[in-house]
Image (tube, rainbow, N blue to C red; front, side):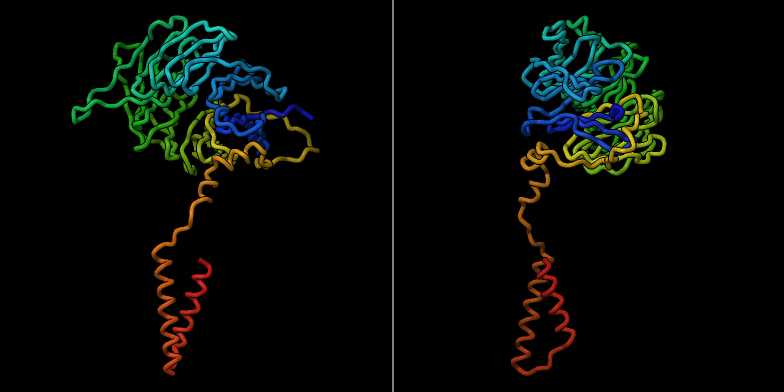
Length: 402
């Protein structure tokens, strides 16, 4: 049997790492858990090497694990202490690992040793790495405006953004950066905020305020991804399950991707193909064609999803003709069943009592009135109306079904 390869890897709230093969329309849980534990939640992922054979997985409890894809096992892990808050992101710098947490502590690790430490400020929501210069990172968060750092010079940022001017009521505009990305081959940075703003900054010019400020919808923007080979288009998503392709030159929406049923937590475009993948609270991984906005693939992964990474290579070696082809829906694992029993949305809805609406109560009152009328007519010897008898039977049947 040939080696099983995957196109997309997704991290879930249950702590399960999932591998998706979009050519064969199948997916697998790549690890297992002894018990459901929210502290094992996968918060961030990145490639551990250039040939994409290992994944660096960051957990909520500040543990970093390395998943070896060819061997289908975790090859190593270490516990880091980057603060008391939740892990926000993880990145790779040569042989070192960069971690960032809520408290604003960003650290560069060489094994178990700290080689560099940055204090990016409280309320950190996002840390992103410049792909063209691995030592350059950007940070931002709630009331924590965009800063660009060189991890080799951690004392002060090389760029610190300035807030936009006061609004028309002369009130200060709040800051809440939820995602950011560096333009490839450029010093410019694009951000999206919890106040539905898309902003572009250019550190190469003296102006510290954004050179572009666009708004999309009216809900917090949770994730963005620049379209490959197009510096003028970006895909953004929000907490209400809306995802759109935006033109940065015109400041307008090109088109909207449809089909979501919950907040989107991560979006990523493929590096060479016109494809974009998204995941979020509705437990689905969706892959769209950027040009036509058509839904190409859809996988129900049974857990609320936090993050994903897209493999550069989409060609998949078949696993042989004798093996049964998966349909993208696997058997429930014991870990997911236990987690969903305690934390699943369905369990919450099942515990709620059914409340009768006014329409149902009105129907029951009408049925009672009809029954009383029929009884009175039978006692007095009046002739019963056949229409009334039919209506009474129909109401009784409706009440039983309710």
